[in-house]
Length: 187
Image 1: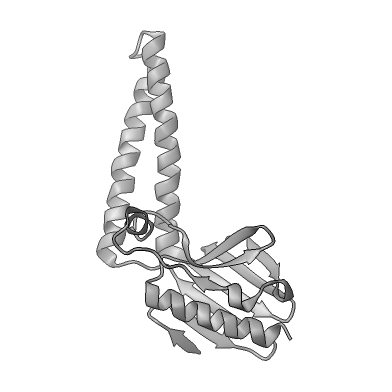
Image 2 (image 1 turned 90 degrees about the vertical axis):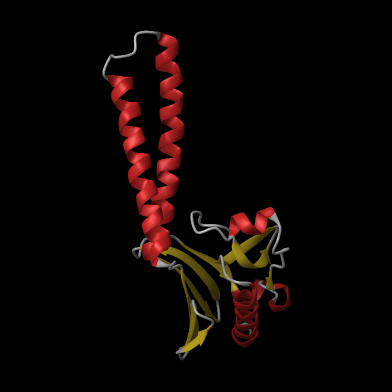
């Protein structure tokens, strides 16, 4: 097994290659996310208590609290998903003669998406270059979101991203390895 940076490992098999990208964050960041989930959950419990207890008399008050609860539920889902992604998630890439498979997995659950190896141009696999001081780059690299991929390729009319929140040097190394593997297996 070969490692590429701190988070990426590459293993060559007889007929295919696999790349595994870890999504782990530092322990203090994980603890902060868990604290956020607990506090956010208590807020939601309070919203639901007042919504269903009959403490509110006016229809307008109930409607406003219902809208707030819907927003709360959406962000509760997002932060729990991010926490699980950071604690138990991996990105799994498999390249063989026929397919380039990308699976974003949390606790072994996740959908594997397959692309035809021969339809991907190796030279079009690129590491994304972003201004390190831009707001988009800072937000994308924040530990409290899943973020976008740092490497992409073109499939038909859309871009496919993978390598979530990799540093610039790691994403460039990953793009180089994927290009090599695609050239090797597309023959």
